[in-house]
Length: 188
Ligand code: AMP
Image (tube, rainbow, N blue to C red; front, top):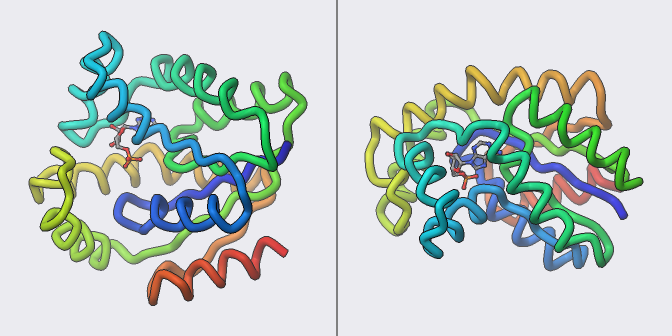
């Protein structure tokens, strides 16, 4: 079973592209962010802990994400493949993922990074705030915090993946369908 990792800053459109690719390729879609929100809606103990981080724009600690991810991946092992959205986000998560993939005899096919410039991210965040129900979308201070957290913790993880995995970058500016097309071209 193949794994496709989609990375990019907050508001780069990762979730949108993952949902389209899931339909096109028949892959399962794993979003750790969606899973955090499900745990919160279900009022689980772990959901309450996670939402404290999520609502401030911070990353949920690696140990919690590791348990959560191991729980979800087992439910997604049947099918053509898996698209990972919003995971891994730290170097430690990348290392955990590589260990897990080896253990389960899976294969990371590609890492696709969606590039969107900093200023455009803030514009998109403001737009998303108009329609979203997410608490972390409502406040511009949280938008900035999420981008800072991305730069501090996730960019080094992306650099690590660039050096160790099959990594490609696509320009995330333009229409949604144009970006999907660029991703698909790069996957061939
Ligand atoms: P997302 O929907 O991917 O933007 O994630 C929303 C929030 O969930 C993030 O801001 C984090 O608080 C938390 N989260 C999601 N995925 C991860 C992850 N891989 N590591 C740590 N925190 C995460």
